Image 1 (cartoon, helix red, strand yellow):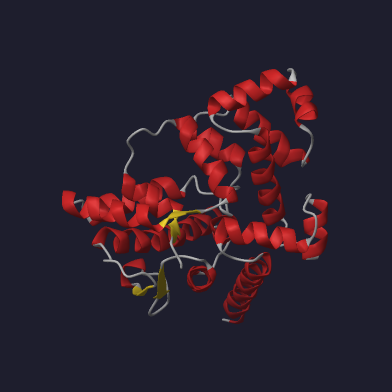
Image 2: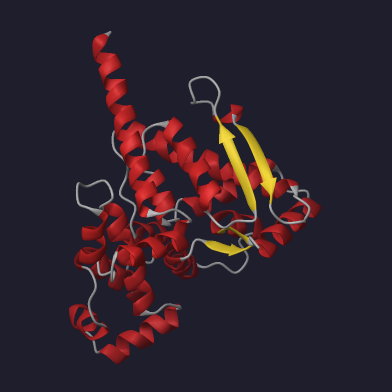
Length: 290
């Protein structure tokens, strides 16, 4: 039975109570590895917000707040796109492949730039009510992805999204977790002992610091490995080469990890990047021919 929901919408619907900058960072790390939470939490939060009379605008702001710190490889890859049409394809591909309880498909009429004109359909795979805030949160997630693409277009290139940039955004860049993840992201996998030496401390001291912050070196290593692999999907390297060089046992291992993170295989994400590149080339050629 499908019983999952995407973590950004779940957290946004549940509200801010109890969150600290460090717990937000730890959640980002955890959701790089597994981007989903139980559907029951999502449904319960939606019902609670409906009872409170929360507005659509409040839900949208909450979703965007959590989306900017989301590094699941699906969102990370989608944020690198330049074409709204390919964002639609990415969102629909996720909903078709991920093991989620509610599948939403979207389309954009016209030129694809008016998020307010989104046409959405939801298919329930569980016998439960579909609270309004859940529907609004899901659509806000899609509109937020479009917003990331529009921001990239304004900047001329997608901004770098990494554990380091999230730590900076949340104000925890001097934490042991942020410093350790920065080394893993820059240099790849290594033992905890070697990591501690790079940070200038003893291994047990590092492990105590990380435990106090709510994370482990192994979790940081796994998240950084996946992000490094995702960054290479747009390269000419084969997926097998990327998997082996980034520390996976083989391509099947990397594929399983990506599926758990985002519900999407690396081959699917690479296909979206290539479709976006083709769309960008087509737009450039049409512009030059005018």
